[in-house]
Image (cartoon, rainbow, N blue to C red; front, side, top):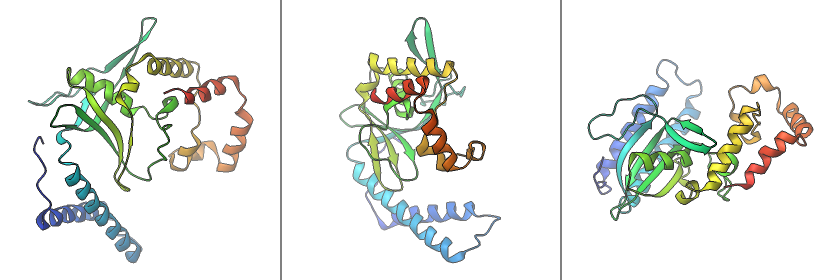
Length: 246
């Protein structure tokens, strides 16, 4: 933490590979894979991903230095000496004497040599198409909340970069930090809070394949029919219009 990365060496690569092997071994401990050939292929893919990640970290070392990991706010944790954790939740004024309280944990914070913070949230899986719409309509609020939390945790240190870091493919989906400090973003949050208060919880079709509760909603064909039936609902239209914001 707080030190420039060591230049790439065979020892570093060997250590990264060894750590990957330790994690893979622990993952299947007590439950050996049924298909050994497929498991070996998956292990090799994982090792390559780890080494690819290491190369990216080394390349990025000249631009920013890792400073903090798993920085929490509002989770009730006591901060160790030199750590920036805060016990209380982030409070975001919404107007009309309403406040939205948010708790969370920032995966990683770097500092640039010339000044400024870099925030990232690690993700697995395939990165979405970066067409500027990932953060619209409240679909992905982690990074916006992290930017606001960092302003509280590090007063006087601006966030100059913030992104979702999809480690499998090496892609980063970024958000301009300036977009979450204005009234437009507050308006988005107000609309979301109002809709939730009315009991509106909208299905996100792109997430259905990975949802732990899809058995409750029924098969995919039924979900699509239900979505077509509900598309004209007045409250649903309010949610869909939010996608044009931020």
